[in-house]
Image (cartoon, rainbow, N blue to C red; front, side):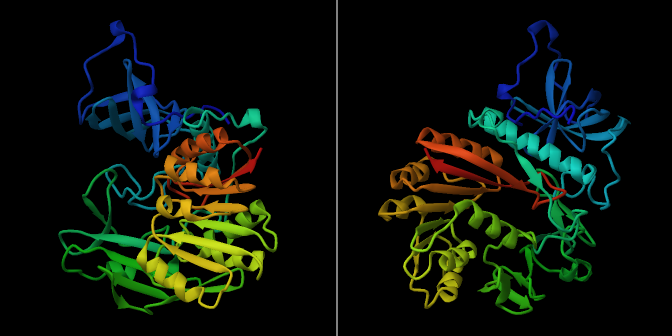
Length: 418
């Protein structure tokens, strides 16, 4: 892959130009011609203009473009591509009319051919591990592969949507780095069963967000402010033969293929055996706990730790009668030190990652294997550094393109006790 050497949107590590090369700072609204150099974590691409670093949206490495500056804050200058002078061979027409500069901020990469999106994401994950985690994947004999899942075109996959309301009572999504609502009449990444166009045809009073959830069983719920407006108040999600009955507002993986994909891979990585004790950290409603409970059997144990009350209520119902599942209500950093034994640990933390306190508690348990599922490569790389410094070897990394058309990516890493 050529011209894809990523950089972070934190400009503090980008070498500044020599004083003699410096020019007055660019200003918001100014237009300049630049070459797109590399992808950056966060949906941006790197460019330079007269010694200044720009973080650009809607570009592709290798392109020569005209950009318009959208913000200048501290060391970071951001811009949008407004004209493509030399297009990349990977540039395509965005299928959604709202995926444009000053349009919807939900999708970052609709202008990039889907396979190349995955190459860019792989490069970003690799760079984050090297820069933030001080882990060179190549030296470990690892390559970050980004695996695509159905649907192959990257559209109509999202089963959970939160819509903002415009001043005119129409649903929409926020523009990039803004609270301004881009009204929409459809969303091409939402599953078709959600029927976004029908929801968009209504006028909504007030500013409370509209939450829509569609289950694998074909049910659709529309809620607002935690109150159900239409559809069943409990959704039924079927994963690997197990049915999870959950609230529409409980966290559930957004991509329709994510639950089965992640459960299958995590179980393969953990190599669970009957009688094992497993910790499922940030376990939510128990997506992974269900499969783990079956794998450890009656003589094993699964500790599910979660802090969200709605998810805990769902988990309590789902695992009622499971003698080998213990649900812990509270923050992982507070409850994990109370666990006395864990042969295996699975964690799927929020975007901010687990953090040092949780990692240190995890290391004290000395599990044989740790499988870490992450939706943010930066926090994953940071936590991976602490885990490897604690005596573990990272021996597997696989990323899944469970957020196609966006900058986001789901990465699964395995650590084994050295």
